[in-house]
Image 1 (tube, rainbow, N blue to C red):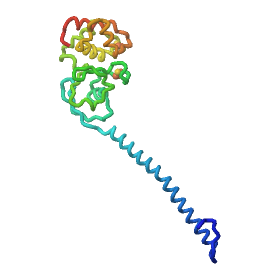
Image 2 (image 1 turned 180 degrees about the vertical axis):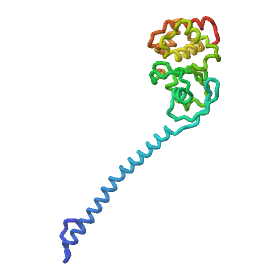
Image 3 (image 1 turned 90 degrees about the vertical axis):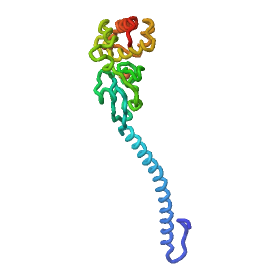
Image 4 (image 1 turned 90 degrees about the horizontal axis):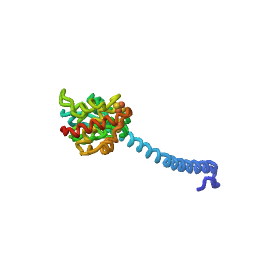
Length: 214
Ligand code: FES
Ligand code: FES
């Protein structure tokens, strides 16, 4: 029966109202169903995102060796190696410059290879051997590269220096210190705002030419 259909019988007016009400309820139910479906989907999506965010902050176990010492840590999956070294292990010799992989101040060695620790997720370091500037010297005996930097005045403010030294050691180990040009090329990821480049190159050349084990 249509809502505006004339109804027979003594109670005709009432029947028209009932029909209208039924149709109204049907339409309302439909609208409610339509309205609720996307809402539920959004709610589920929000819960999913919440879970993902919670997972980012949930700490995970990490075992690695740092400067010869085994370390058992609990780290957030989003933590960088740089932040773990500085904030959890108090190894603040490794510097945070750009935090974007552009300056080299955060250079450390992972299994003997240089990496930008600001771009390295700590959780990926499970079972790795990390060496920072604090682990380069042999007790009170400076590493030859540290001595050469002092001798050749390879720093001014010193902020970039730990990263420069770690990179310089790796540069020789990699066999990329054959000439001034090659040293400059393979040290180009380490920025020195004080402009100590010529002295840094001299220091690297001396260690390379001296044939010391680095
Ligand atoms: S702090 Fe890592 S490259 Fe600048
Ligand atoms: S010594 Fe100052 S930034 Fe390099």
